Structure formats: structure tokens, C-alpha cells
Length: 302
Image (cartoon, rainbow, N blue to C red; front, side, top):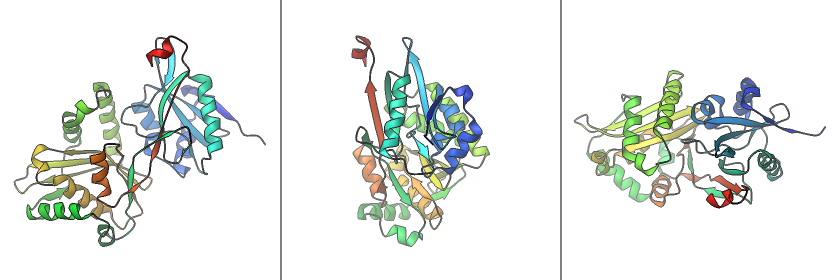
């Protein structure tokens, strides 16, 4: 029996089947669930193989009357999700189907969607299913020196921090670096984080000094045995105290020995990549794809 990929407008997506497909996927990511897409995408439709055997969200917008596929803010990876291996041939079929509906696309596909036409982007993961003493043996020397310095300062590791304060601090500290993330995007993301917090999927951890001054804070998502370091914020007072090194190390220690993957949510910035590598993280790249089939002269504007 031949397989078929269908384009489904948003109103025709069976979200119960969609989320079941994601949960059963070998490459499930929190960003691909319907609740996440509903929160962060301006619009999204779907490509569905047969009866939800494999799925791909199509997040899109419209400009000058032209539909285009784009990557929603604070949504690092999407692409094709399936319980079985995503082959290059299947990627080809999905990409060909996208091009029938969109003249232009700039999208990020997940770590299993490798294809010669795509450009890799950096992400790092750390499997936490070993004792902390074993995980620590992979730490680099400069990290160990920083942790020793932090230990002398008697920093405190706690979950006693306000979620909305943590989100606002991150926006204030790093918002200028991501001007494409609009205020409405931050508002939608806050609503999403609060929803996940109520459901027990948001993890908050912070580092304070002995005078109870906040130095660093991390917002993480935990779903399907994957712990996402979705936001990590170090305040100016925490930089010289190695508070972020202390905080990430404490998170690793807390969740060590569990069947969990710590997802650092990636960065192509060399300094940040170096920071993650210091913890013994492994590279797990995801993929960027862009095409431009817009008519002339609109083609030239992109």
C-alpha cells in the first residue's frame, strides 16, 4: 500500500492524534506538541504521513499577500517527527510537499532530519543516566577551577525563585541580542511557561550568595525524559562569582543517575559552545533550511 503525505490546514488537524504521534516519536521534542505550537506560532498547519505515522508542523506567516514558512521565536527545532527513523528519502518527500504550498522558507529541523541540503547548527546534550561522580570526570580543568572558586564563596542552590521574575530578568539581560523576538512573543512564552509550571513540566533553579542576593537563574522544561535549559541568566554580580558554572553543575548533580538527557538548547556562539563543552556535553546538531522561489522582483528582497 502506497504511503501518502497530506497537507492539513490547522482546523483539520486532529490534535489528539498529533500529540500521540509526537509522544511516540523516537525524536520527540517539547516544541512539536500542539500546545507549544499554539502558543508560539502565528499560524501553523501540518504535513501528515498516512494516519499520523509521521508529522511535520508548518509554521507560517503572510507578508505582501505571500505565505512563507518561518521559525517561531523561542522554538529552536521542529521538522519531521516519527516513531521510526527519518530517512533522507522521507525528508525529500516532505520538503517537496512544503514547496507546493510556500514560495519561501527559513526553518530549523530537528537533530534526526539530516540532509545534504541542510546546514547544521550547534546544540549540546549531556546524558545524565550515570552517577554524578562519573559525569564529573568529563569536566574540563578550567570548569573545575571555576567550581572550586564558587565553592569557596558558599553559594546556595535553590528552587525558591519566581518564574515571572526569572523570565523578565532574561529578557532584560539578553533581549537586545534577539531583536526579532517581540514583546508579544515574550508574553506568549510567559503564558506557556506558566501553563507548563502548573502541569509540573517547568523546572526553576537559582544560585544565591550567602547574603541571599540572586546571582543566576535557570528556566528548564522537563518532558519525555528530556530536560531543556530553555533560559539561563547570569546577573552581573554573578559573573565574577562563577555562579552560572555553579548552577549548571548543581542541576547536573540533582538530576544525575536518572534516565534524562540534559538539552543545552544550543548556540553557534563559540564562547557559549565552549561553556557547554566544559561539562562534557556531546554535540547533537540540528539543521537549517532556506529556499527562495519567490517571483522577481520580490525574490530580490529576500
